[in-house]
Image (cartoon, rainbow, N blue to C red; front, side, top):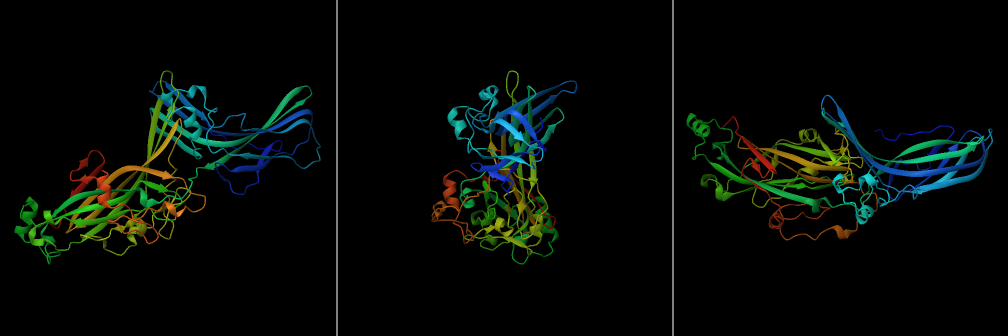
Amino acid sequence: MPRTTAKTSNVLSIRLEAPNPLFSAGDTLIGVVARKHGLVSPHATVKIQLHGRSKSHLVVSNGQTSATYRGRCNYFDTHEMTQTLHEGPLHIPNDVETTEWPFAVTLPTHISPLALNSRTNNADMCFLPLDPETVASTALPPTFYVRDVGIFSQRHHSFVEYWLHAELRYTREGHFESKEADLPLHVRAATASPVDPYSHLKTSKTLRVVASHRLVPGMETAELSFHQKTRKLFGSSKLPRFAYSLQVAYPTVIQLGSPRAIPFYVKAVPDWGRTSEDIAKVPQQVKLVDIAMEIHSTTAIRCVGTFSAKKADDTDKKPLQLRGPLSRLAKPVLIPCGDAVAPCDFGALLDLRLDVGGHQVGFREPHHSTGTFYPSFTTWNIRHSHQLKWRVRMNVADEDVSYEMTSPLTILAPSYGPAADPSWVRPPVDETWIQPPTDGEAPPAFDQIEKEGEIVVAMASIIDGKGSETITTGQKG
């Protein structure tokens, strides 16, 4: 099930006038259908058609036999997207350099209800409803391609493609002949306006307790006695204990090409009620060891089966390159810790951004390639979605602590239009623990989000399958 490739020759070709090869829904494609060979025919027709479709392909094998399943969704009605550029007698002398037929075709902004295949009209075969209202309101997905993925017994691939098809049909010596040309198009999905990243943050906090003699002022680097090491080894209740809440605000929406860094706020708030009295109100340092982020991109497909839909999915895990930028920061990197401190925005500190092509950029120099991130989209036989997995590792009094979580992430296409109206900026809230950049508004406060049930309080290794935390005891005691 190959994608459509460019097909051009001297007998028929398609040429676009636009210097930019990228197009968005609503753009008008201006160009010509051209022929460089002579031709004499009493009747000839030149047509140009715009096509768009998504295709899925699944091969299931048991080692002895294999079965192939396919899914296809057309996006445009053939009659609506066909233009006749010439009809009638045609005489092209051999000495004419090129004969051209100009055209102007507008990319629709939505999918045509007349386009879906009859075999697709089964709700179990589709990710989206099939009613005319839903079809007509579904925006065009971007050009997309996932290579052959999966395990040995189940391999699949899928793509979304758009192309122009030209046909010259003519009579010669009493019979019909035809010549064809194809030109693939790179269509990008465009978001109407810039999206405020700070209005799409979720927050999570976890209670951590560190027990160590090194929490006592003056003992940070002192040699521990045998008695103190024994207490540490057996986890004595007499060890000084420092309790704190690690609070993280992480993004749920990322827009490609945004000039603003992807926000990622971290801070620690002491819990003096659970802290030992002998170190109560004693400032403690929470040192950042490492921050790691991965974007998990899942492509799910559905194909037409004999009695029911055939389904498959595959997840591609791409890490964001953060260790290079982190290594350039002054050491040690401290996570803000206090009752009323502002958090550190590590996204801004590391200049974490994705460009319009879905590649990681920032920190004033190119990173190693992380691959391409496509915007999230759903069509009838393909769904492309994302999750963000992050992990924060820190050190308190020589105790290593890590906290990680995986959460849904929406990646939006770039905004190619004018800047958003200031109405998208929300008024500041009365209480907030996050101090935003000077050119943005404050994200919601923890108290506000906690009322909405969005805070995850983590004190176990696994919390409802949404987050996990681990504590590793340091070797120095």
